[in-house]
Length: 299
Image 1: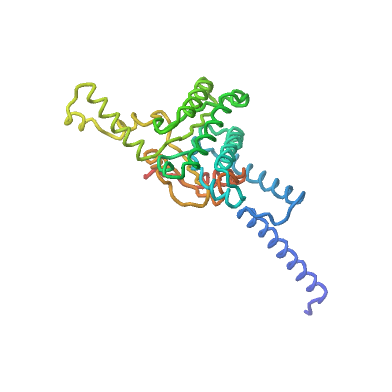
Image 2: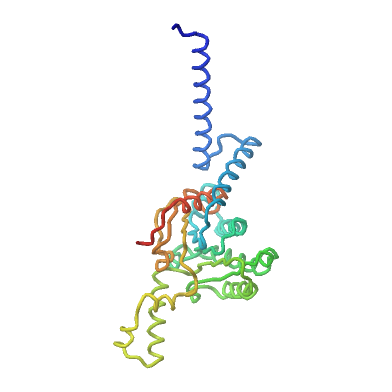
């Protein structure tokens, strides 16, 4: 039987058109994943909004992580890309992202998030930069202590780390934020300031030994009593559950000492976007990646 040339041509054109549209859609999604806008204006806003809602539906259909840890990396790289030079302005921009993370977390019903703000290693940076970090952290803590939305959403603010490394003004702001939110129970936001994983374990062992000495135990008796649970009881926040998911921004693929003791079974997600530029779709992708993993806890 002879094929109808017209039908064959139309069929080929239809298939070609479908492939072209599929390729175009794939290119849009690939661009979204890279954080690149393939077009701008209302069309971009529409596509972005549709993609965000798709991600949200996928994430809400699965169990949420109970505790998310975030390593806030990429402030300086974002500043260089944006032409910013003022250290205080750079870190104020990063601090402002906390409000968005908090809103996204509340919307998704996640009960706990821990954000790594400053480590002892950061003290090796230039004095102006260290001052910018401290000033931004102080301003954010004072804002959190007085923000109506913090009380409205039942947010409890906690801080962990070596407080002896922090200036007096920042310590006062931390105390005010913790006191103002002490009775809130809906969500706990922990800020790791002056925090290092090795330092935490070292301090926990030191506290354990001091406790043994206070009870009159010998070195041999203390050694018999040491265990993972004994160390855990002396961590900075001993009642904090281990993080289910740890996210690091900026594209770096390492933990750098974040929650070394607690992260033994955590799922890790490394995001290419710098911290101040993190978007809701980046947060949703990280959670979706966590939900798709088979967690066996070493079993």
